[in-house]
Each structure stands twice: as C-alpha cells, then as structure tokens.
Amino acid sequence: MRVAIQQRPVTASLGLTKNTMAQADSSIDSVARERHDLFVQTHMRRVFLLIYRIVGNVADAQDLTQEAFIKALSREEQLKDLEKAAHWLSRIATNTALDHLRRNGRVHFSDLDEMPERLHVSRAASPEAEVLREERRQLLEAGLAVLTPRERAALLLRDVDELSAEEVAAHLNCSKATVRSHIANARAKFKKFLERHRKGSAL
Amino acid sequence: MSHPDLRTLALLAGGELPWWQRYRWSFHTRNCENCRQELEALDESRAFVARNTATLPAFVDWDRLADDMRANIQVGLEAGEAIRPREPVGLRLDWRPAVALTALTLVVLTGWYLNINRHSIYRLPSASVEAGDARVESGSDGIVLTRGGGRMTVMQPKAQAVSYSVNSTGAVSARTIDAETGQVTISHVYLD
Image (cartoon, rainbow over all chains, first blue to last red; front, side, top):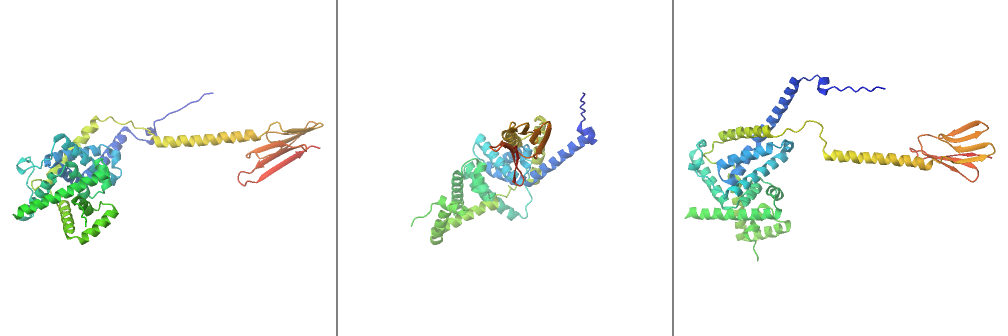
C-alpha cells in the first residue's frame, strides 16, 4: 500500500502572490499607523498638560510626553479598548513624570527666559485677557510647586482628570488610604498657598 | 463642639470621606460658620486648579510643539520597530484555550472509559442454562438457544447496555434500559 501526501502552500491556493502579500502588509501597517495617529491626536494635549503640571517645565514635559506615547504605542494589544488605553496612557504618563523627578530632583517651573528659542509667544485674544490668564497660570504653577510630586500627581488625577480615588491609587501604585492622604495634603497646602497669595496681594 | 481639621474638610470637599463621616461633617459645616467658610475656600481652590490647568504658558506655540512631538513619536516608534525582534507569524495558543481543550479531552476520555467498563461489567459471557441437548446462553447479539444443530437468537438492541443473568427457574434473562425513555425491557428464555 502506498500513501501519498501532497502539501501545497495555502497562499498559492488562494491565488496570492508575493506582491499582494506585501500590499496586505502595508495596508495593515497603514491601518495601525492611522490608529496610532488618532490615539496621539486625541490624548496628546491632555497627557502633555498632566506631565507638564507634574514636572513643571515645557522642555522636560515634551520629552516625557514623547516617551510616554512611545511606551504606550509599543504595546499594540493595549490599544484595543480605547477607554482602557486612555487610562493606561495616563498611568504611564504619571509614572514617567514621577520617575523623571525621582532621577532629577525637585520640580522647577521654567521662567520665560529659559525657554528654548523655538517656543514662540502665542497670539492671545486681547492683551488684558492674556495677562490675566498668564497671572493665573503662574499662580497655579507656584501653588503646585509647593506640593510633593506625588501630592501633585494625586491632585491632578483626582481634581482635573476626575479619576476616582481607587483609579488614582492604581495609577500611583499605592493604597487608597495613601492617595487620600496625598489628596488631603495637596488640597490643604494649595488652599493655604492661595490664601497667603491673596493676603500678600491685598497688602 | 469639635471641628474637623483642614485635611478632613479637604476630603469632604472632594467627596472622599466615608458616608458616615461625610454625613457628620456636612451637618457640622451647615451649622458652623467658620468651617463652612473653610470648605468654601477649599472648593474655590479646587475649582481654580481645575479651571487653569488646561492653560498652556503663553510662550508655547502648541501647534508647533504638537507637530514636533508627533514627528518624534513616529521616529521613536520606527526606531523601536527596527530593533524589536519580529514575533513568529503562525498559530499561537494562549494557555487558556489549551487548558480548556485538555479538560474537554479528559472528560471525553473518562466518559468513554466508563461506558466501556459498564458494558464489560454487565455483559456476562457465560450466562447459560442446559437441559438435555438444548442450551440457552448469552451471546454477543442476545440470548442464543441451540438444540440439535439448530440455533435461534433473541436479539437485543445493540445500542443499549444489556445485562444478562441466570435465575433459579432455569431461565436466561436479558435486561435493557432505553437511554432516551428510561424504559426497562426484560426478556426471559426458559428451558423446561
């Protein structure tokens, strides 16, 4: 008895050539690329602001935002659920910023004359509004600088990103009790800072 | 009257206190002017943070900065792609389907083994009665009667489990249970 086994490549039976395979690959790449672009576009400003408020200067925030996105986008499987991916990205961003501060010491909010040349002054609606806006921003940054990095991150995630205390705890890899302590300290310190500022302004 | 400290009020402002504390201190702040003012100041400072965090420094040209970042992210991803080893394309079994498949195989094998055993336990190959030249015995198809070279079989359904027995009245009995209806059929073949 003779048994004959015949094997054929599947692609041949489907009539696919090397060329069409390459086209399929490139269309998969372009779909992934589009998904990446959309993800970056949707979250970039939010992530940049989160990191900037934690580290306190634009140049570092730029580098760290890029780093956070590259880390996030390198794990394609994490992007399937977009809502989870957004949380995951915030978590990466927070930890990237905190790691940076751990390595490089205290937060330092940049002054205007320290900014790189390529950052230009934006054109505001009116000079008065722009001055007022700038004053408030500087006040915010000065107030945030009073907090520890973890207090700052907890405050921003809870009061700006509106995450629950449990989610903030997950982002910061600590217990809910610790997060509550960070949040309570941060709010109390920031309130005292604003009061001091107002008293100083009134004098 | 005891008053909450500033940290407790800070948690009350954001709704992070457990409900009994929240109830207690909410009630307190409604009746205590000083604590109410503290709470309002905390609310105001929270609102200030939330309102102004979205503001970028005036010297930042966001569009240009965002373009730079997008380009650098793309470069970073391409560089990472270039050095990352490609995963082999092909069948990749996750551990969960593998465990499920193994469990299913075990169930099927156990069922098959028990079924084989049930048949082998109930089928008694040597259940037989003899009287003169006549003989009644259990066979593979049912109860077999042989006499003087002649042979007759009382057939039993093959798909069902059959148990054979010999009783004291000189009969060979076959007992079958219908798997679908549960009906029991007993056939007796007597030799006088």
